[in-house]
Image (cartoon, rainbow, N blue to C red; front, top):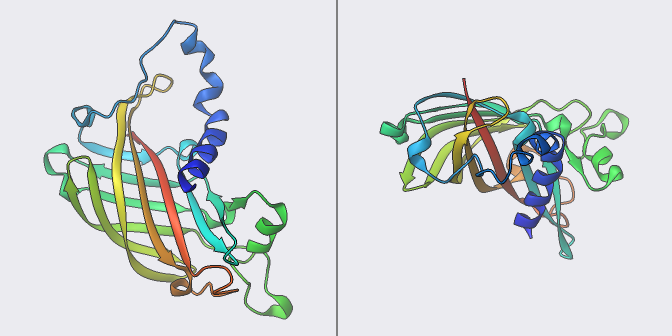
Length: 217
């Protein structure tokens, strides 16, 4: 289910970006998809996240009835990578928590609602600071990797590990930039970051699915 939600969210995001301009390419015939799962296409350098095509979905369980999803878009950050020394790669990603959205307007507003009578908010509050992940180590196995690092959320920093996989590389036909794609997933406990409301009715465990495109600078 989480893969379905991630794919749907990515599709919605892409419609306002590259896909909106796709007719210009399709008019040329049946082109090859620019990105391919070919590690040989990756060149060394510093890459910046493409915020229009990078996002993170979160999944929590609601009352034991079903799973529910939300999205963080406009993800920014950098990737420094050298195919000759992949375990020296560095990732630094910033997530604008204030841009959180869900399928329910009321729930999205609740996530960003201030606390009652000057108290702490139930979730993120009206002006949450961006979250940030900074890698501290990378272990590579073929086209997959375990990326360890520190996640800062709600002013609290904790170690997390991302299970990442390479999903494609090539040249973006619109801006001519070399682009690398990755997907990753991890699970955190929101209580570790001081977000305790409604536990365990709404699960403490939060699954994160990450889809990132990085463009060479």
